[in-house]
Image (cartoon, rainbow, N blue to C red; front, side):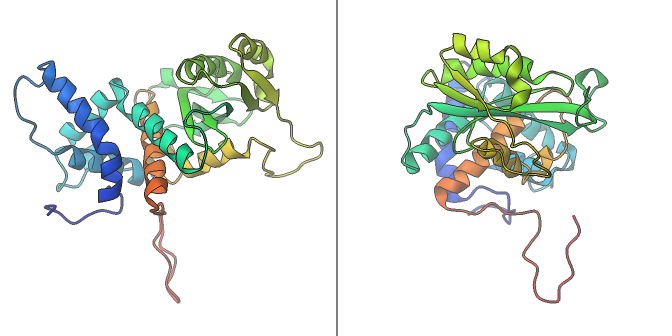
Amino acid sequence: MRPRRAYPSDLSDARWELIEPVLSAWRAERRSRALEFGRLPQHELREIMDAILYVDRTGGQWRYLPHDFPPWETVYGYFGRWQKDGVFAQLTGLLGELVRQREGRAAKPSACLIDAQSIETSTSVPRSGQGIDAGKKIVGRKRSIITDTLGLLLAVLVTAANVQDPAAGTHLLDQVATTHPGLRRIWVDGGYRKHLVEHAATLGINMEIVERAPGTKGFTPAPKRWAVERTYGWLMLHRRLVRDYETLPAEAMIHLAMADLMARRLTGESTVSWRDPIKPNQPPIPG
């Protein structure tokens, strides 16, 4: 029996079964290289992951982790090592393949979508890591993502907000062309027109620019590209991503959120919203 009451962000037994093999393999590999100096781990991997998910879902600071989790220094240390070793990206890739197969698709996609989101930063982000998105009038960072046609994350890059979309897109295309060599088509908006069409062609990927209909006002889902726009909505269910709090660009937080969403999808568990269901005659809960 677990020694504490569960938080809504905690892994269920079913979701833990999905990710446990990856984390256990990581720990076994480190121990085989004697990186833990022969000491037995003091904390269970599940408790560490629960604590990291708590930060991602609630948006709290590492130092403010509840005391019934392992010490925040330990949790943050694991997060840093998992980020460096690509564990979160590995989870996203493996769970994404399982979701695609569940939906009757091939494990590896042949088409994808790309989009960027500028987000404000907190005071913990160094000025050198920020920029100004002149079009959206946002001072902060930019998250560029590539998803499959289901909206499942394939790659992510975090840059200063003044980095142009084609520059970030070039880096992402090179990345997904290596990890997903079967990609043959990508849909983008007009912001990626410059230089990127030619670069995609050199990778064997046909790029199609999707424009909004003339005279369109307000928010209207773009044909084909609505799936990647929806993905940003999914990610915003994790409060840590509503603003960029990371001192260093942390694509890992985005991979973690996507892994959480896909694990819930595979186990049939709904994603908990920020608010509990409101009962009749009950005032809204702030926050």
